Image (tube, rainbow, N blue to C red; front, side, top):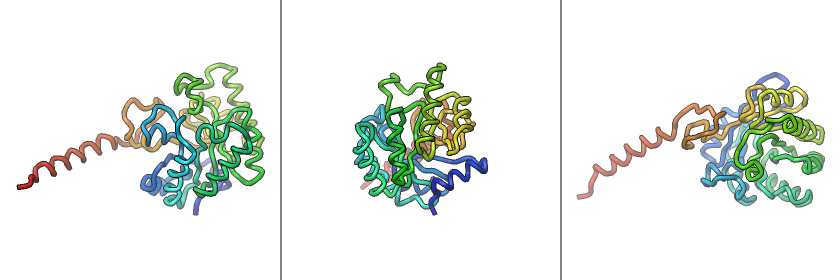
Length: 257
């Protein structure tokens, strides 16, 4: 049975780390589901699956397409789907309509949105109608053009205060979980200690309630350079190349007469 938001909260209360990874296809999702507590169909599919520089061009239809495939594989983990750029920012009514599409068409258990102060009302309204929202704070990839790239956040006191207050306000307005990305460990720890919902970090140190990585980064499939915080537990890119080379040799030596 899939883990619920309450199950993830129980892990936090037991001080048991939440294991989270991304998936964009059935085969990958089926493998990681055996080991994960939380699986995210992230808009990082724009970078990883589509080969683009940013996540900004990922559409609602594309995220739904990939999430439908992942949904068929998830039996154990909590299943969360990212809301793509401009699918939730224009107005609350349109955002709720799009979130509803994702929930109904993909069988997701929650949706993730990249936060700013204007979106607190969206969290409140979504949670009031029974939709768990994962609030993403810190480095938000959909703000790539504002940052001038994927750059660490929370370097100055004003940035730290903004991120902290946004996380706290997201919790107060009904967020079910917080993702902290690309922020100092001490800030991620402060957020984690001062809210009663789980936190999952990426590039935010080890003091959060769980960790998430892009699966292809973790497996060493994506080419170098990878983000500095990524620990690769395999080198499947080189392993795959060696296997394909052996296949090529096998085919080439069996010449037709």
